[in-house]
Length: 150
Image 1: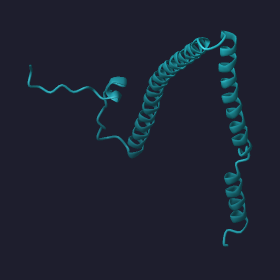
Image 2: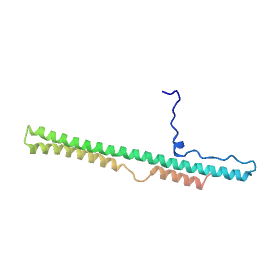
Image 3: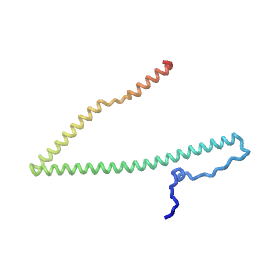
Image 4: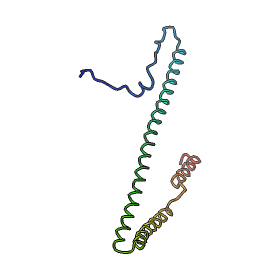
């Protein structure tokens, strides 16, 4: 093992290798120096935007993979529920005819669906598509703009 610490380069250093800079000449005018500074700032801003884009692409890729995993988990959960329902039907079939057992399990799920529908409809009625807080603050802003001293 070596005693030298190993450090990973920062993302900026990996994405944008250090560029060669030229020291200012003694004869450069103030305008030339300001133009060079403005150019450097513009170049730095461009590099920052490119780095942000690269990071966003990487994060979007990770998010897409995670969403795919959630989709797979949802399908697996659906399959578990399906087989549990089949097990309930076959379990009840030991006590009664299989048709009646299937009807009882279906009725249970119909009842659960109806309750969920009613609760969802009740909550949906309380949803207002109009952004009331935003409208109120816009009215206040307009009133202030008309009479800024009040």
